[in-house]
Image 1 (tube, rainbow, N blue to C red):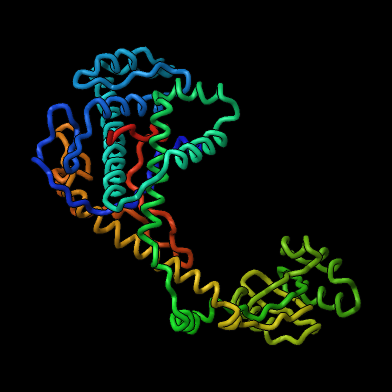
Image 2 (cartoon, rainbow, N blue to C red):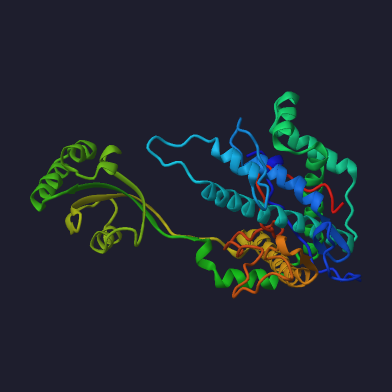
Length: 396
């Protein structure tokens, strides 16, 4: 899906201490974050866009309309049913509309709340982005997503969004990256002692074991293995012997060759024989669970160990990434704890990110666990809204 259509917002934010003037959500709002109210108009706008995004191409878009869902039910009743299937009742259609509305509401609220969090955190950290930078990002993404302007205009018409919506979404992306960069700034210092310590504890990661290139024949019986060995001992080419006798299709297709075998990769009896054999010595039959092997070692590639000097740049970059990811993880843990306490939602619009949400036994972390050897470099993310929903035009 084109990047401009995605709604996974990379959030890098922290708690904001806001001098609030009351925690109640006003009647025209769905949520209040500090002093900022997310209005019902904003919610309705993005609910409409979300409904467009969840509808099949070319189908009529009907936004679920609580509490009775009259329009939604009427639209659902027009939909064809499979041959032999029973037509759903009005009550069943209403339940479907309620479920659709609840899903869209959850996603849109998560989107609106996370968007406001980004903006407030950027203000707190004095992060500024220029209109020129946002426009450049927008035009680059637009060019990647749409070959012709007509395609872009069609998208706007079908998505329920305006160009201002898309611009704001891009702005959030730019702001979020700027906040992330501020968080990890100065977290990339790695000492030579840290590099050496990592190398000494992880030497095996920078080593290559001895490897041997083989020519093999695998047979079902010991007698056929003996016949195959006699044939190669007699001067027949290994490829022709493998073609005649071998039941191992992979090596057989390569003329009997089995390259790059490292210790421990084969069944123990065969593995021991391989690494005890002398180069060019024809060995076998060796009994295994797969059958009987006859083989010859063609080439021995000795084991190697990279030195500290050879690996220090790789280790330095790895430790740098780990430090930065740790800073992001610590940041977002505190951020979610603090910011949730600043967010109150209207009774009909509560999501897990709201301070007044029902208590749960576990809290899902905002970020995944860093990948071993390749820590994540992106800012934490919040929940996603519908893929075609874009960003909110307001925190304003």
